[in-house]
Length: 362
Ligand SMILES: Nc1ncnc2c1ncn2[C@@H]1O[C@H](COP(=O)(O)OP(=O)(O)OP(=O)(O)O)[C@@H](O)[C@H]1O
Ligand SMILES: [Mg+2]
Image (cartoon, rainbow, N blue to C red):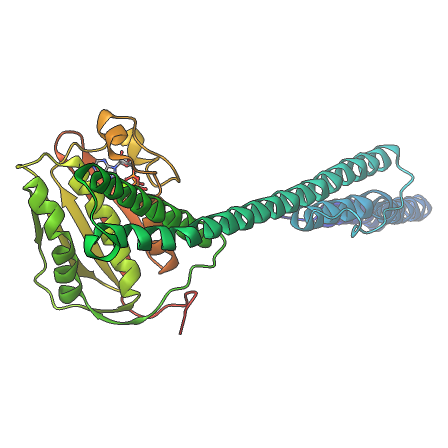
């Protein structure tokens, strides 16, 4: 880009030179020396006048325009109209242009200020809400410990006396409901901690093959009840330096979902891990009902559940995948899904092999 001042000087310089040159040629070739001299003096005066007027125009027009342009560039970077350079001009159009720019800039600056205050207030309200519900969930969790303890004592009849069949059924029902409530409260607390950035992660060397085996072992009772297969597809010997329990939690949430969405007798669930440059890519694959493309974009949001008859029967709360997302991201990785309706679903999540900066307990 060429500054307007340089263009003006170039044009006026060339014009002045041509006028002076023509006067000089005229003087040297003139028959009458006096006429030639008059023309030369005239050409010199015109050339100097052109140069002087260029300097004047440059001062009164180009300098304020340049300053205005600089102020605009600065404003676009800082959004602060107060930092502008003062512009003194007697030219009406430039004066009005500057006035309009200043008033517009002031409005933008005020709007940004109000918006920032508004965002801060919203963040504060959000934080207070999260802290309040975190406190409520914590208070709900405490009485569940004696409830579960006493129910378990009632179930062991030798401790608190014999119960008839009806009473025992009622106690079993209380036990299952209290367990569900405990899980729900736990999930809400984990989600809140993730949101407040307060969930702590542990880091230790973990053998992936051992981890996958122990996860499968935990699910044996449930998969045998539904008569489905849960297998490991893992040939590599991988060690990861990360939070074993949180990885286990992600796998458990994904496997629980897969179990719910495959057909009894026909269900096939495969879990595994693969090395992928700096990441380990884990997966949980099922041959269940699948997830539509529209729902795939939503399922990682809190409390999102696909409205199917299966979902209604499952009694889930829609927090499982939001927790998986929070944990994988907290561990420096990510989670995603690939699915085809009526064919099956694969959830992938990858986690860095090397230690990264996390909210660590260590
Ligand atoms: N493997 C899967 N196959 C089909 N649909 C799935 C699968 N996994 C998740 N979904 C759908 O995604 C929704 C959200 O799953 P998410 O685990 O977050 O919640 P949930 O299982 O309903 O409840 P929660 O895990 O909190 O008990 C589920 O309700 C279900 O509709
Ligand atoms: Mg779930």
